[in-house]
Image (cartoon, rainbow, N blue to C red; front, top):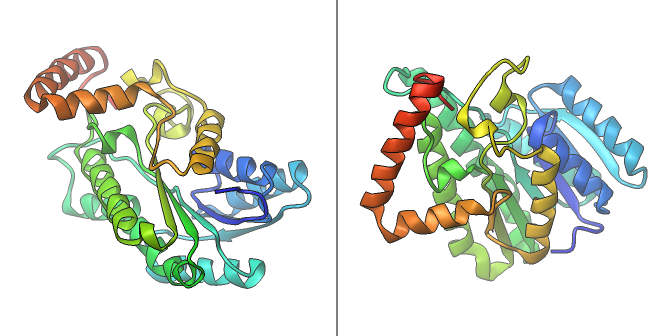
Amino acid sequence: MDIRNKTVIVTGGGTGIGRALVLAFAQAGARGVAVADIDHAGAAQVAAEAVAVAPDCKLFAQRVDVADADAVQGLVDVATERFGQVDIFCSNAGIILRKGLDASAAEWQRIWEINVMAHIHAAKAVLPQMLERGDGYFINTVSAAGLLSQIGSAPYAVTKHAAIGFAEWLSITYGDRGIKVSCICPQGVQTKMLFGESGERKGFLQEGSVTAEHVAAKTLEGVASESFLILPHPEVLEYYRRKGQDYDRWLRGMRRLHDQVTQTFGDIAV
């Protein structure tokens, strides 16, 4: 898809990958970008940054809790009213929970609502207008954890696998009706999710991590080629192939990695 003159929604747009996506789409010639985040002040700041570098792009910020289906529908309604239509929905917001079997049912429910249901809410809200036009694009920020796994976080591994599954279903079901789907699946990205609020956190994914701007640039490349998998870390594809070729061998290797990582960084070693 050619991004020029397209309209875009980015959730989780107030920081990290979301912020980088907003700026990248605006600079690439998008006609309008809606910056959505649960932190309205952060979203507004990013919208202002984007206007400064892309004055011809129309931008607005809106507070949205992506776990709330009505709020996501309201975001789509406002964006449609302002832009005329929504061409691309970047379902980017996500959270991590550094727990295993000690995670409570409430914690599982919360991460499920944000990492999985938010993608479903987005599709339900905007798919009807896309199908009516016969054209539209979903870009879901997932993670390499959705293809592989996540040492130190059972809820993250599970929900990211589910997010990949839903994206596959969308593409299978609506791909021949003009709906494109991409999943962004990086490993470590240099954001607060990886390093912590003040940069104090240590973890094995920090080595080899990439910037959010790198992820955004690779995303634009993936959208141009309409690739389902967008891999800012290209080695992830080889890891995924090895998993499929010999699952048991892959699991043995992951157990060894788990032991190495937890010995170095502790039990919560994301």
